[in-house]
Image (cartoon, rainbow, N blue to C red; front, top):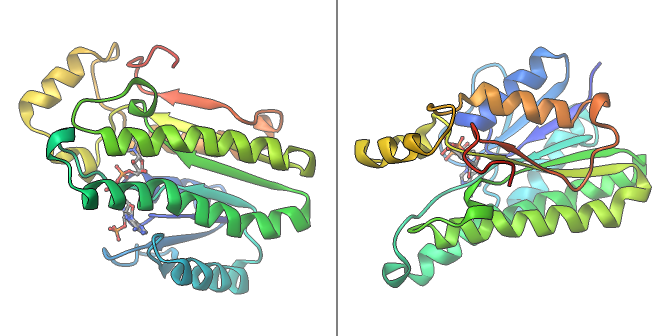
Length: 234
Ligand code: NDP
């Protein structure tokens, strides 16, 4: 039967690759999406992670279809890149609300069922820039750094109840999120990546699936870089 897996922001990019990878392994997978539509062949619920009522409704729908969520992948995320002096309060709030507070909302809701079951896996999608910082991404980097402290706190609070919480920190991945970068910026980034290429979404999905597997049963509070060497382990 597999496990009940929920991936937020699973309509495209990394989230979709993660969802398809769990499904191929035999799990019961649900994804949430905001506006881009249902991915074919997956159980999908429209839910904006910035809206508490959407999050509640999404969990209710997933629970009635697949049972309580056993593996949560908090993946939904956005960028609003600009230099700090040009950043509006709205740019700041939107990114923090989606990337950090959105993860808090879904983790808190998922914890209910996991605590009852004395079992659960939470995996948070952060970023290499959460640890290194990034000019023009103060809002995004702060949201991703925040996820590390959040996940480690969850790991400490729920460890004794059989729940793990880990972070995956990708470098640059070929998705719509990075398609907006200029050719010049892409070349600049690649010059700093020892593997000299972007990751594919599947390369992130493989690590997420490992963290949800029995092989990772003694890993919690970890930040796993999947960045082609860009952060050299940080
Ligand atoms: P995409 O832009 O390709 O996809 C983002 C996904 O998040 C979409 O499914 C989108 O839904 C969903 N989403 C955005 N806002 C909300 C919201 N408010 N509520 C619900 N869902 C939302 O991004 P990626 O696949 O590239 O990134 C996925 C995650 O990985 C993000 O957290 C990102 O920060 C992180 N990451 C990405 C990197 C990269 O290089 N691409 C590098 C490091 C980290 P919809 O389609 O409906 O808009």
